Length: 103
Image 1 (tube, rainbow, N blue to C red):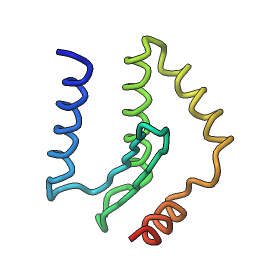
Image 2: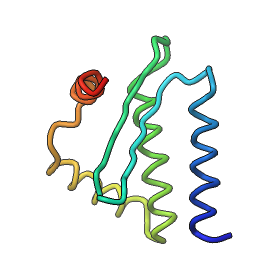
Image 3: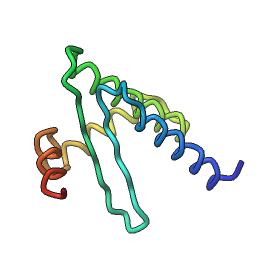
């Protein structure tokens, strides 16, 4: 499969996952051709441990990036932590407020 068709297959799979009714949390990041980044964070009103859900999602993303880059997970995690310290406020509340303003 080409990179373009791999991307399309993975994007379609993501759409299928987002269409399911049993989601309790999601973190979504999208990068466009002009390098703009859009992020969405949402959590349902479930009784489950929200912080564990967020951490599990982060760990899955770190693992995917490390695997794709062919490097160790801890190197990606350290780099991500360093970059996160340089970003503007990306709190869940700030993202929810930004998303509400966009609607």
